[in-house]
Length: 353
Image 1 (cartoon, rainbow, N blue to C red):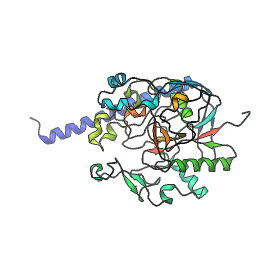
Image 2 (image 1 turned 90 degrees about the vertical axis):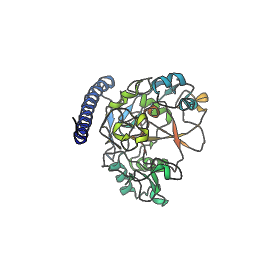
Image 3 (image 1 turned 180 degrees about the horizontal axis):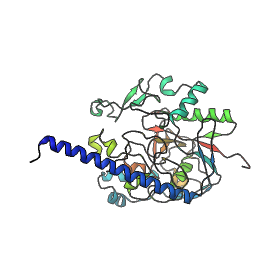
Image 4 (image 1 turned 180 degrees about the vertical axis):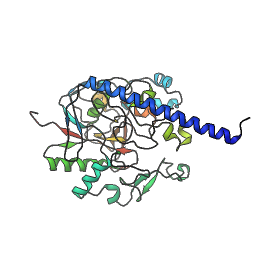
């Protein structure tokens, strides 16, 4: 007869074995997908900049932007979600043809803590969360969302949190978080002035085009949410340990990361871009328009001329798989800073090159 101590020990060993198995599967999957991506992409043209930021040249091309999946279709593959979630996606439609008419360089990874630190140190820039004195958001294991005024998943705003401290450990190779849209634009402007070539945030159309990388499925890895396991750091069994009530929405596998992962820890897409799904949400330049897709131009759409909130894309380490789809649109004000939000930059291709 097993004692309670035996059962606990056996449970621990089984849990460790499962994590080891999942980690092995993910490494094999990453290697296989990376090989496929290299063959498909035929070694994309690369560049680097003064911050040692690797950039991939994304070729001009066409794609179908958005999604017109029915609530019934989505409910089949995401049975744990309330049906009303599938009825709040009108801004993803209609699916429409978009043509990106010019090549552009795009960050191979999200902007890292180390790259953002160099920008701050060399430029003297003070991030918005520090400058306005209100701070950012962060993880605190003793914080109870149910007892907070907003019911937010993270503690904040609080001056102790900023891009330097999201409440969990990060190295210079992790994606920077707690950065506002204004912070991202400031970094792009500084790089442009420093290097004499234009940097900027991607348009929403450029972002989705780069994310899909020739695919038309829910994710660049396919339609199955479990396919994210090898390409994305999203809400999984490791992250769910800290949010027990949401574990039913997690990818039921262990990727080894309870919070952010160092950039490029997962397999790239066919364009050679890493972490287009998950790790951190990424700011785009566009204002959000609920009905913009119905009147979007075909060539190089720039989004509405004005608005109240800017679009962010891709999901994060804390994002349920449904919200990490290539077509999903989220948004926030330009002053928003959050422990799930970062960015990557476009560098325009100079004329004749």
